[in-house]
Amino acid sequence: MTEQKSAGLRFRQALEVEKPLQIIGTVNAYAAMMAKEVGYKAIYLSGAGVANYSYGLPDLGMTSLDNVLEDVRRITERVDTPLLVDIDTGW
Image (cartoon, rainbow, N blue to C red; front, side):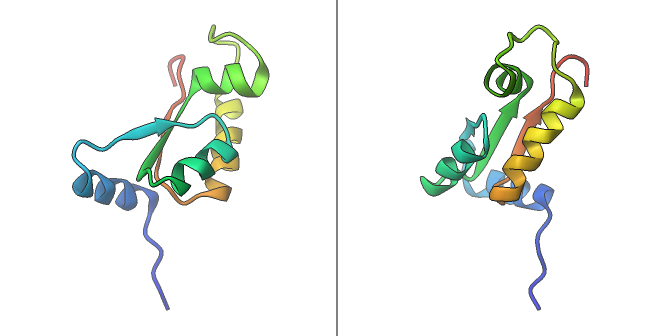
């Protein structure tokens, strides 16, 4: 039986392997899949990206924590690449 590593452990390992660790912004699951395919060891999602790309809104605090978490779920269901999330607006 193989033990699955936590996302935090995978992120720390990526930090050890690649210095400095290059993290690319991904705005959806497809972009995350492409980032993994070309070899990125970690990916990034911002609250602004969620507002802009998922809702067609400016980054003016118009989206919620739940909106960002929905995109986090979509991304993490498709890739196991460590995901750094900036939820924005005080979260």
